Image 1 (tube, helix red, strand yellow):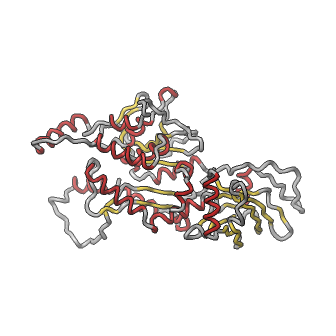
Image 2 (cartoon, rainbow, N blue to C red):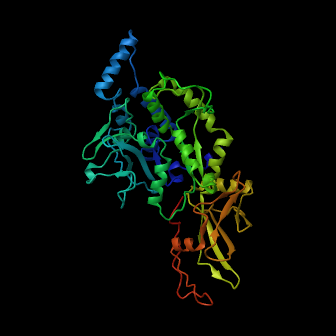
Image 3 (tube, rainbow, N blue to C red):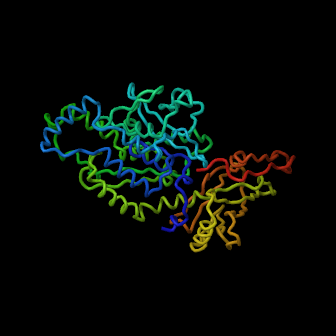
Amino acid sequence: MAFLKLSVSLIDMFDLVCGSSAGGHVTLGIFLMGWSSEEGILKFQQLAQSTFHQPESRFPMLRSAQRLAWSYLRDGQYSSSEIERAFRTDSGEDISMFNPLSNDTKVAVTATTAKNPRACLLTNYNRGFRSDDNGYDIVRAQKSKHDISVRQAASCTSAAPWYFKPYFIDHLGTFQDGGMQHNNPSEITLWELKRLFPEKPSPDFVLSLGTGCTESIPSNFSSSSYSPVKDRFVSRIYKTFVKSIDGEKIWQKFYNSLPDASKHRYHRVNLKIKGPEPAIDDVTALQELQDQAFLHSRKPDVIQPILDSIYATMFYFEFDEPPFYNGASFSCIGHIFCRIALPVASRKLLYRQLQASSSYFLIAGKPVPCVDKISSGIPLFKRKVTFELDGLDQQVAITLRGITSQPHTISGLPRSANTLIEMQGLEAAFGSTDHALGKPLPQVPAKRKFQG
């Protein structure tokens, strides 16, 4: 796959990452523990085997009864000790959850308070000012010495009732599985994104990863009748609850609420499992699920829209100076940059990929080749562009074509010229008849302030 050859880190591709339950483990492992994809797969296999280990018994029915009784007394079937061990350093030391990354990627996992259940986020960043009516809380200790560790966050987000007992953290309280409130965290992540980046009207792209779901069966209201024995209120309540935390159903509801014009920015990858879903603790199904997931992720219709989003949002635009009025329209001069600090070898490969695919930026109906020639020394990507606008309230829209299968808007756009000028801190003295500038321009920042 051509994109993978660029050796772009996952951490550099996302501004905000959030996970629930097992997805929380993936989030913490990849983004805070620094595991590679291969290392993460191996560690999760080992973690599942050690956590859900069930010794063989000559009397399985008796063993099941004993486990049931013991689970009731302990408020959970399994210990979280293996989870805690997995999310420590190799030398057994704790890693603080409050751990801002060098590229400023925000990392969060969901949890639910055990008493008076309420959704929470355990984050690697400060919460800032929050009103009391957010619908969820950001959990931070009053003192830094009481901050949550990564192992504690991992134990909280996956403390699913029946499987694990709620997890207690000194000075903060008791927490359980984040999936009890947000089994698919797409919605709460979007809420958090708007609070972290209020200037962004919408994300550049969203990628939601599922853990597998059964293939949907079309509804047939006349196919079965109500059974007064099987369909009593306890059964109905249970089935309704299970559906309410179904990650795929939650995604469908979330996706259906999006404006049609924005839906192309939202991607979901989830393996459709034939037959019933394996139990959470069924480790015998791991290898088969892994093989199916690998094949599913290689399908062009699954991966290509995601790659299109990633390629396009690697690029962003900045004005060199405020647009100036030429008597008929506003002349705009600026540059398109790559927001990922690629090493020289990767930059050279990107230039070649753009050339080979005859890629270009489309600006106000005018195509601009992404690369004319590859300069010696392989400098950072920087493409000068000029275009005209009828007014500064007009949207600046730049799409990438060629290397993507479909036209795709670059990062941070579309936005009005006025908004871009304000975000860059450029000051233009518009208002006089000749639109003259009354003072020199400030230096343009090297990188745009808000990234998608």
